[in-house]
Amino acid sequence: MKPVSDASPILIVDDDAGLLLSIKATLLSADLPEPDVVSDSRLVMDMFRQNPYRIVILDLVMPHINGMELLEKIRAEFPNTVCLIVTATDEVSTAIQAIKLGASDYLVKPIDGENLVTIVQRSLERYNIRQDVERFASNRSFSNLTHPEAFQGIVAEDESMSLVFHQIEAVAPTDYSVIVTGESGTGKELMARMIHKMSRRASAPFIAVNMAAFTKTLFEDDFFGHAKGAYTHAVADKKGFFEEAHGGTLFLDEISELDMSLQGKLLRVLQEKEFYRLGSTSSRQIDVRILAATNRDILEEVKQERFRADLFYRLSMYTIRIPPLRERKKDILPLARHFMEMYGKSMPERIEAIAPDLEQKLLNYPFPGNIRELENMMASALLLEKSRTLTADSLPGLNTSGSGGAGDVQGLLTLDELEKQHILRVLQETGGNRIKAARILGINTATVYRKIEKYKISDKFLK
Image 1 (cartoon, rainbow, N blue to C red):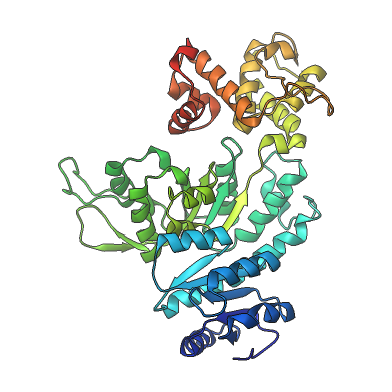
Image 2 (image 1 turned 135 degrees about the vertical axis):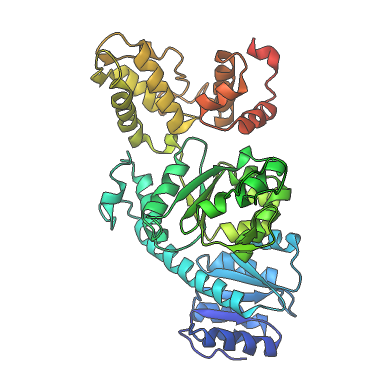
């Protein structure tokens, strides 16, 4: 088939002419732009070069050039295009392979018309948001924010954070589910709260939940609630997190820590937008926006089959990465002064400044624990300082392994080595207490155990 219009933002590729016409009719009936359609996969790249499409819907099984091969070609030459795949079976392995090649979502045959329209509408919005954000990416500045007043409570002067703010401004007015990524202690929950604050749901609840804390037995009761008499100690009806967040935002922190068996239960609620309280036969509808956060590489988790690909697709309509503090050098001293003022209010004598040598050490420190580590560091230093100026003597354990000049690279450690040393030092200071160590490091206890296993930290090193 020939393309209908060179100006169309959507291209559908399938060797089944009947399916092409059906998809086209469904999109037109929903007042979406008229798509171009093509049944010969060999023509697709030339069509793209004439009209770089915003969205392409690709069947996986086609003669000549199959969908996966075509997906790889399109992503390589037209990386901004949103690619949707059509598969005959809802198999995790297929979704994982598509994710690896850059697909944004997938449809399963027979295609549900309502789901098709929703995904295409969402994909057009996603493309537009990306374009809006990219306009600011090359010239990062806080000056061209639309609502700078919304961010006044956040300490941020480094230009890398201006991109994050622009992304928040772009995605907040939508109902997109968003994954916020970043190392522990970078402020992922704070950014999630900003998205909620700037959304149409701002007057409704914001419920934050740490997913690492849930076992199989607790999950359903805490998320879905229970009816009176559901079990022995259920003496009254109980609302779960979904009901508590109804009309607002549910923030799922450390989403990648959720057990695989529970990921399916979460996915079903997100897909169906309804759930059952334990002990009840009545379904309950929900209107909740989902924001999630993880300090892991969630794409890698999907590829290693530790996180469900279908759940990833539902959560990752948009992704915001929060840079670590070592990539935000201009924020280190403003944050240090902010914490000095915040914790200094309770001190008998006010500390008024940070000594230049301490400033330099802070700037050279890699902060594996990020902002949380800096906050804990400043709070501890204020307790030890005897003068009105905060000095390096107040932070005797400050790791200055990165204090050399730009050309002094001998003896510098990798980030993994720095992290291992820092975690080991905190564990030694806490006598091996994992819970206290997690609190100081600003991470959850499960992550502490995982780091101990990763770095092979034996108890004999903690004595």
